[in-house]
Image (cartoon, rainbow, N blue to C red; front, side, top):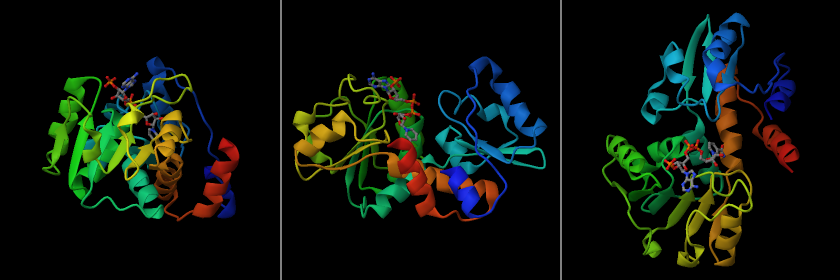
Length: 250
Ligand code: NAP
């Protein structure tokens, strides 16, 4: 999607994936300076470990505790996180309003942090349910710095108190994965989201229960749009990016 947007704007850049071994992360980051790259995206498992290797971290990425975008300027590397904004933009373009809503996030990793940062400031109440209780509690303590109505849950049921339920775990990346929660608990007034960028079994089951659903494709698109703007200072053609993304994923 980035290459399509560069081409449409006549920008002489290209976007290339590199698979970086964790032991060579700092060498790869130094390589950004050495090769005079404009910037990079960072994905799992490097999003947190990369932070001390950068010259600056912007406020939002620092709060979230993870970086997905690095901008290189005059040899200075600055880390950003565009995942949370990407998710909020995908909700908004789908006409979904979270104000006055009770929202449950399942998972307490980097993506839950990124979306939690924004959701906590908008929703009526935000609940975090994580497999590792201490990690979920740490996230809630951090989110309480930006909003008061945030808490952990020991038990998801009764689930009818949530207007929106979001899977922020990797469960569903493979079709034989267990579901992130018992879909028998869902009912038709609920909105169910998955950050995985295709319709997972969780979303299909939720849809059968009559729930409205949203996958992570819009989030993937918009985090990329915001990263593009950080690198180039230009607004890309979002529809060109959306089409390139859809063509790649289908
Ligand atoms: P992460 O930092 O590794 O966190 C994963 C979270 O899921 C942790 O809380 C982990 O629990 C939990 N988890 C993992 N396996 C589990 C299992 N078998 N049962 C229950 N909980 C489990 O990963 P992440 O970066 O947050 O990514 C989470 C998901 O979001 C991934 O599917 C990723 O592809 C997706 N994502 C999508 C976008 C997009 O643009 N659409 C952007 C970012 C991420 P523990 O704390 O116990 O380990």
